[in-house]
Each structure stands twice: as structure tokens, then as C-alpha cells.
Image 1: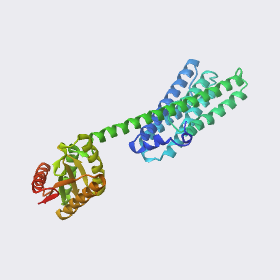
Image 2: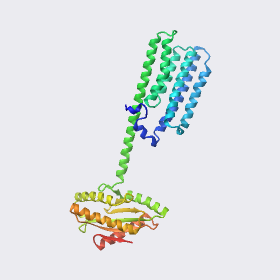
Image 3: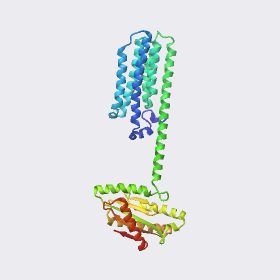
Image 4: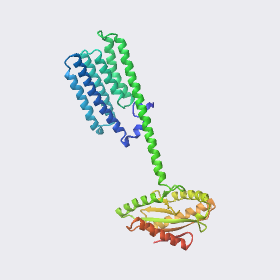
Length: 361
């Protein structure tokens, strides 16, 4: 068990707060306190009826009032910080177990009353998920008072032995609470791990396996979002489509393993060349796609020139002779498919003009 579990929820649970995991757990605590208060009152009423006595309605009404407070806290907890909620939970636990102890003494229910008290005391600890210090406070307050009363009692048989039994029951309740918290934390660890793995799988499904850039489907999705934003706010957006060649020949003619290694290194270099707001992807036919938000044609041409410079630097470092043919278009409110087709046509025009050519509208 982590040390921080004594005063706070461990980091795993605290990290879930933004994901609304802490809220339902705290809500569950108040719901369980309602059940414990009602169950304790019913147990007292049944025990008194079996003894043929009149119940103390004041105590019963107080238990019902505590259950109403717990029920109300389930809905008002969103307006309360965590610390007041924890204090209220401990106070509710003391109130429920304290009233059952008072009813046991008032009705002279020597055996049954003490059993009901121990049930209320342990249930409020076992069935609620709280930091361990809260669980300990919930047990020690009424528990120590009850043990003291048992030791001083002259009417019960073997009060010292019964006090020891009560102490062992409270210890068992606390150990169970520790195990419950540890189990819940392990479960949340597994949930977080599964969520991380799911996000990784989703990210992998969006990436080109060779370059780790966005694949064409993911690029189109990102481009459609940027296009919608550009149209809404009347911002410019340019699209670059460029094809990489080796000494004027398509890369498909080279060794596939060598090409993959080359493209992986080139993609890393291109990512450093473009801005963090730019979107870089790789199409199904091997061409590269780059969306440049808030960029006009003049600056898009500068970006293409930087890509050419990156290619030249990459060639000198790897002994290659890579060139590119690039087409550039700026959106004018047309659909994404139209923008892609127009830019691809300009790329093919650049390819016909020769290596390292840029065609711009």
C-alpha cells in the first residue's frame, strides 16, 4: 500500500479526477451510508420488537435523518471540495454507529444491540472507499468508546473478552478496508493501462508504418478540420503535394528495405523543417502531403524551398540524390477532394518539367 493512501487517494485515483472517476467513488460512499443507516434502524426496530419493548423513536428518527443527509450529499457533493466531503463521511459514520450504541444501551439490548453497533461501525468502514486515515478515524472514535463501556460494564458476562472481540472486529474491518482500497487502485491501474494501449493502437492506425507520418485517411481528416476552420474564419490555407525521386527515378525502382530506411530518416528531417502547426502526411501512392494553415501562396513557396534545402542537406549526409516535384495550391472555399486533385495535377506538371521543380497557382 502506498504511503500517500493514508491521507489522500493514491496518485492513480487522483489522476482520474478529470475523467470523473473520483466523483462516482465519492458518490458511492454517500449511497452506501444511506443503506447502512436504514439497515441499522431496521435492525434496531426488529430487535426491540422481538424483545416486546417500545422502540426509542427519537434515535430511529435520528438515523433516518442521517440517511437523508447522506442522500442529499450524493447530489450536492459536486459543489463541495474533497476535504469537507471526507469530514462529513467520518461524521456520518460516527453518528450512525453512535446512535446504534445509544439505542443498545437505552433499550438494554445486551447482545443484539452490541452486534448492531459493530455492524454499523464496520459496515461504514468496509463498504466505503476512503483514504486510510479516514477509515481509521471512523473506527477509533466510537470503537474506543464502546470498548471502554464494555470494560466498565458490570451487567455483561466477561466484558474484557467481549472488548477484545470488538477490538479484533475493528482490526479486521480496517484490514479489509486496506485490501479494498488496494484492489480498487490495482483495478484503476489496469483501466489506465488499457486506455493507454487503446490510444496507442488508435494512433498507430492513423500513421504510415514506414515514416510514422499521418496516413492518407488521417491526413484527409485533419485537412478537413483545418479547411472548415479556415473557411469559417476566412484564414488562408495552402496544400503541398510532392513526390520524392532518386536521381530522377521513382523510389519504387529501388530496394524496398533501403527505400524504407531512407524515407524514415527523411520524414524525421521534414518534421523538423515544417512548423508544429503544419500537418504532414504520406499518401497511399508514396507522395507526401503537407497542409499549411494560416499560410498564403508566397509563404507556401518559401516552405517548399525549405523542403528543398532539407533534401539537399539530407543528401549530403546520406550520400543520396533525392529530388522532389512539388505542387502548391491555396484553398478558395472548394471541397477537399477538389483541392487535392488540383494540387496533384500541379505536382504532375512539376514532375514533367524536371527534378526539383515547384509549380504554384
